[in-house]
Length: 104
Image 1 (cartoon, rainbow, N blue to C red):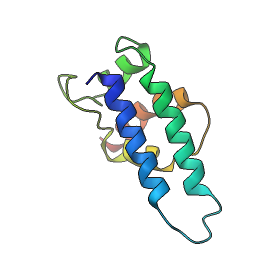
Image 2 (image 1 turned 120 degrees about the vertical axis):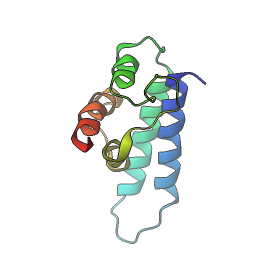
Image 3 (image 1 turned 30 degrees about the vertical axis):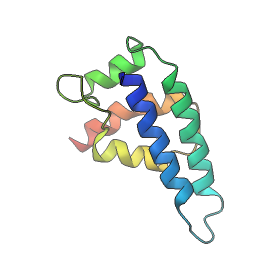
Image 4 (image 1 turned 60 degrees about the vertical axis):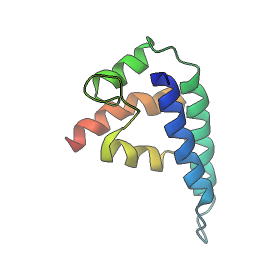
């Protein structure tokens, strides 16, 4: 599995988790988050492994110390992804290294 595919799979899994959540009075938050994450997954799936965004995530350690592991954004990156509700998909990817640095 390529790094972009690994990233997209992670984002799709998080979107599924949000769709499976049942919260009364969430005001559509879970649905908005799921749609935003599915949009980001589609975007990520179209990136080449040598794309600047993928390389930036690799440098930040999202694919393990050698860059060959599955996508793992760390606890703060996972929190950012779980709460993502919009903007452009690339903005989520750009925000991940900063979130990971905050948790280090």
